Length: 287
Image (cartoon, rainbow, N blue to C red; front, side, top):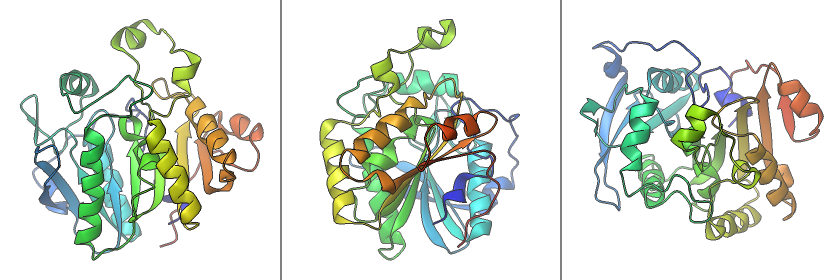
């Protein structure tokens, strides 16, 4: 799977950079809906593109299955992929349907009250919701005849693919603007920066890191790709530096390559030759 898969500008960071789009009654006809049984017992609705192709699990950002997320899924379908988009929040979010949901503030309040999520801790991972995501990976692979899949995380879920590399079905993990541990509401509203150790944290537990490292050693075909905007206000780019350092310490540095978009991506890339590409990315993937 080409590193350009998320390069068309659809992954717009943790704060939506594009004007909100309205969905129409015909939009959902572009997808088929299914339900995934999860370990938590919470039924998970998921939508997938209609055409056959290489399977991808696309995890949504904090604002939910927004029109931009659905647009990315349809664009990837044209590139030759079958894309699954599950709702990590369930079918209803504060009374609104998950399909087309696009409200980061309401979603943040919603998941702060959901015991499945651990949003702020450095050491214990994302919480029970992560095992639900593992079940989603296995569901997609089974449904696609046991094929290997790519997992794309964005913002809230940006680091999830890193912790899923020990899943046999996951061949490629795409980390787009990983934001966990999240900023607190006062930090967002008052622009209070996180401490350096939190800005560089990946939100993975030590056990998850150990499993990922072991899986990458066992399977040389597995790889990680990062996408970022240099100045994303909710997703510190220092997380990419931490990932690179951790992998390099295990002689796995060549398994992670990051793409940082303009205007400041070139400056960031020049200081990190060999593993960061800067600038605008417009190429479609080679399917």
